[in-house]
Image 1 (cartoon, rainbow, N blue to C red):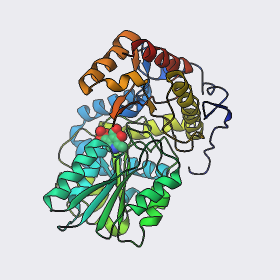
Image 2: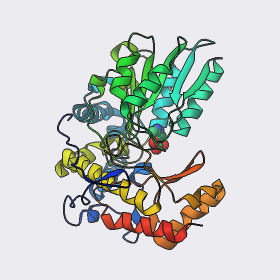
Image 3: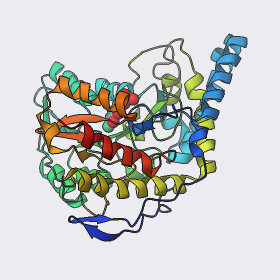
Image 4: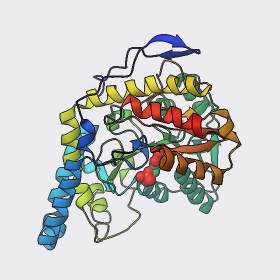
Length: 409
Ligand SMILES: Cc1ncc(COP(=O)(O)O)c(C=O)c1O
């Protein structure tokens, strides 16, 4: 996978920001009809919960039907064989051995499983950055706190200058007591690709294990998990892989694998990573079993084409929105830290909005303007994080640009 993905060519400079000449051409005519999204809405929030292609929805429905027809045959006798086949296909795509994959329902569950499995002593330190996803912040604080360990965040200020700056700040922020670094592959509030390879290499030999929170990575950037060399990796498949909600994975390096167990301890404790994670009590396996259909659908579109298209759209969208709203980009102008989304500062008048007012504002954006876009507070700023998936068109972002100007307080 890696290596084949080319960054979009950029030209022209606008407001100090490099602007592509125009948005990318659609990957295929009428792609939106492959999804089930409401036609009336400019859906710019693929990043939160994903959106299911119709064929993947049908596949999951078919698995639910088959499970109802033969519950014991599928959930019991054929379970391991079916899960192994899913893991084989997933592993082939993302550079993991099937036996090293633990299927989970979402990244929060997977990361909790890792954190709760680790031994910690009083005074040890778990570190992440201020760009961490809040649920993971809570899980780290909670788990570290129970052992009398320290939770600490390294500050990476906006605007971010470069990948090198991020790597330097993170590595300089570690201490002799740091045992674990949780680093986002692609950050949630700020939508930045962090230089995880550089950071992992810098942690080697310093007694710091790295857990990569790759919730957004599979399907947004080329990924070879084993080659990255982290101790642990967690990824969601319901986001950019377009698999059903309830499908995610964790991976642990061979020398760390035996210590990691699911949150739910069940029959197969200690009998192998994939096996142990594959049975966490009776559950609906239809989301996991439909993962291969999502892989097939997206690879038929062409992963390289999908990633390039979405990146090119983000590269065009980011400066366009900055210019329309009169704000500066929070990331380098060449788009080198962007994948398929970009966080953009909202027009300045929005920063006055309190959290509750922000929710009302976002609801009005949806109800009155038909735009679904994530919005969040970041210090004194409000950030919007429009996402780019192949079903989006330039008009979706134009609609967002106009709506924000009409709605701003
Ligand atoms: C960086 C990051 N980590 C973890 C998560 C949690 O994902 P989930 O809610 O699927 O567990 C998200 C969700 O958006 C995220 O963006």
